[in-house]
Amino acid sequence: MGRRAWWLLGMNLVIPGSAQVLAGSRRLGRFGLGATVIGWVLVVVAVVMVITMGTTGFLGFATQPWALVLLQILIAFYAVLWIVLTLDTLRLTRLVRLDAAARAGVGIATAAMLVLVGGGGAYAFMAAGSTNATLDSILAGGPAVPPDADGYYNILLIGADSGADRDGLRPDSTAVLSIDATTGQAMTFGLPRDLFGMPFASRGTDDDPDGAVVDTMHELYPDGYDGHLNSVYTEVEIDHPDFYPGSAPDSSPGIEATKDAVAGALGITVQYYVLIDMGGFEQLIDALGGVTINVQERLPANGDWDDAGNVVVEPDFWIEPGVQTMNGHTALWYARSRYTTSDYDRMVRQREVQEAIIRQFDPATVFSRFTDVMAAGAATVRTDIPRDMFATFLDLAMKARDLDLEKIEFTPPTVDPEQPDYAYIQSLVTQSRVRPTPEPED
Image (cartoon, rainbow, N blue to C red; front, side, top):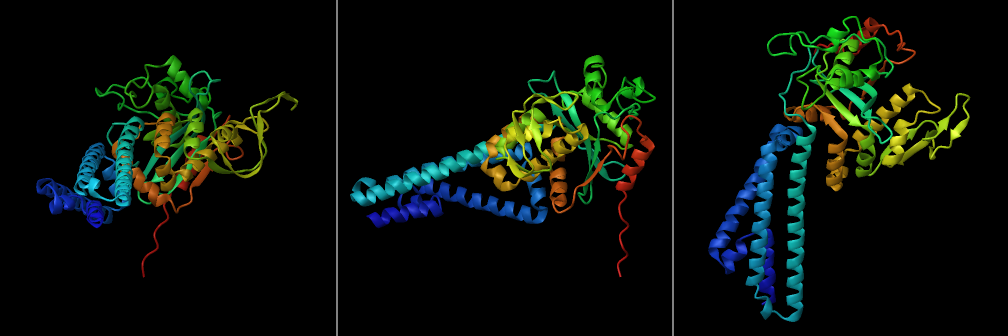
């Protein structure tokens, strides 16, 4: 009797429905077997799709909204079906007729299987739903756009601070990530916050569907901006909220104006933006289990100094030189620390933290901390990249893994922020984006 019970449990585990066909309700068993066969067919189809489409292509397909909803339905269906079949199999074992040892063993094994499969199904269901909700909350709903005339996607990266001690959202660092749409080779152009006199890019008649030129910063400052880069966002949000009327809901007038300023300064088209809230860094980094950074010099967390360099307020703590794994609080102060170093140094450190976060997004880390990472990411990142572009950028990111990220910082001594030569800046951008001519094949 005990051997029969173990055989039935094993059959239910390996081929759900087979125990019922052999010893119970054949109708339920045939339904279970049919569902099992269909499930394995779906697995084979998924494997074939991975082989033919590639991993990134498959992930792009699998993360479509309808695909994730369908996945949730399938997970729920198979989890419930397996629980029903397992409980029915336990009935078929005639548990009460087993001796005490066999009864305990079969009961414990059944409970363990229910917990593992039921818990795994619940986690998978939650993960699929969380992924769908997070992608919806972060990514935009607009159409995909092609790369620029040179074959690049250009994304404005804004590191903004909305901490408790700040009045609203204030851009702290600005850069453009330029990605070769063919190879995935990426480069960043760093722009100082005190860059003066940017020539705003013109949007022509594209701002209005009726063909009329609407108010933009290019119309207001046709000869260049009379302020610094970090004031563009605030000026437009406060003084010209009616500018860029088509920016909602995925962007804002201030962000669109910053796009135009950066596009005009670099001489390129900026298709998208990604805003990373420095205030949310702490939660995101903690969710990832910390980030590893090679600290080059001793830095204070908070504190204050007078003009003579004397300490007025002691720092909360010091960040010491060397390679260290930082929690969110320490990494945030590493990116924010302004005393004893320059704004340009701080700009570089903020990008170091951003790059460290990207490196930490390996599959094992994200899977083990999935819920926390998704929640923190949704609270930290804003973008107008449409969801339809997710697969494209995922594919480019995979291509770029083994390529070095090229960096150009338009800071002293390369560029004088107060008297920048924009023709020179644009020539550096053009030179950096020249693709090497392929060597002829023998």
